[in-house]
Length: 36
Image (cartoon, rainbow, N blue to C red; front, side):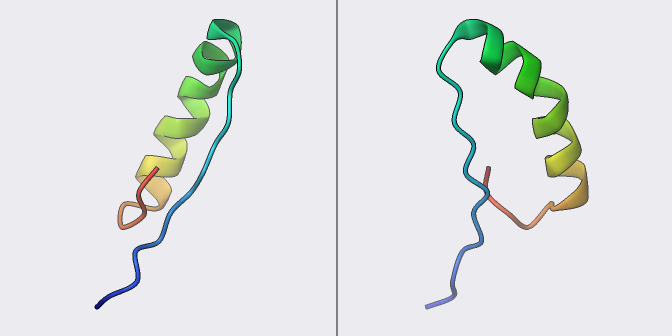
């Protein structure tokens, strides 16, 4: 079985989730093989 690479983020409030959106997009672009 192949190990899956994961980037785990935690946000509590809606504001934190919204402010993390650009970071998530950048992580997806930089690490396409990772699950976020």
